[in-house]
Image 1: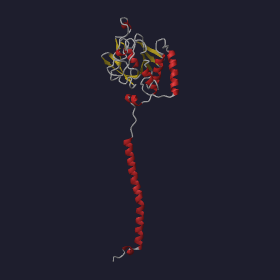
Image 2: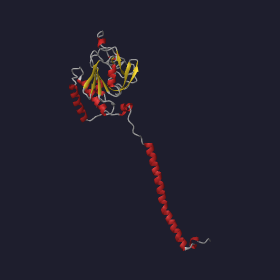
Image 3: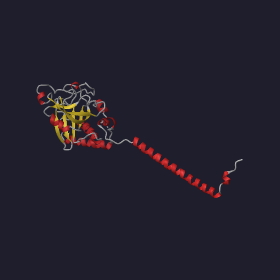
Image 4: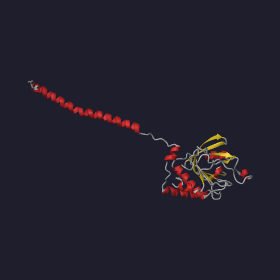
Length: 278
């Protein structure tokens, strides 16, 4: 039979060993807690690193897809008052611009301004395609100075109609005009000389403008001289073309982020446009 070793240990030594054991046992949870804390902190830092997305300014395409055009009732009432005042102050009725066209245009312009779509908010352009192409139906307004800068001719698409535009499309090769709100972009030189790219921002109505090469450009198939020998102005492949001798001034006035609105009292557009009905 083996002797009981624990009984043979000196009582003083036994007491010292017990103290050491007790001290080490109290350190163990502290060390574990410290290690766990480092581990959790490391995981937290790792999660922050991988899960956080830096905020960036939305690009033009994201605006079309993600931005809501909704506004509150107070804003809408204010906009209506502004539109009525501006329409009267500029005597736009005498210039032939439909009041409905202006009110819709002003509302959309103010919404796009509020939502951050416009780089330049001092200019608003409206093409009133409810009018005959024989009329000066393009209106460019300096909103800040409250001045009508330009009132001139503008073409509609060949397949949209003859003297009057009646049909509209967003489809490539349709050779029709597209209704709705646009934001002007940069200029370039093409087959028509100085031209201006425009982005259609209403899905289903004009968002294929770039794919269709819909731009603002000058042309010799519309204007006073053209009308002397023709029953109505010429038509484009869908572009809002303007008189060639005015194109430089017009493009410079509206380029780089201003609002353009192409209007016609088409029920489908007026009843489903997210901007008109905001």
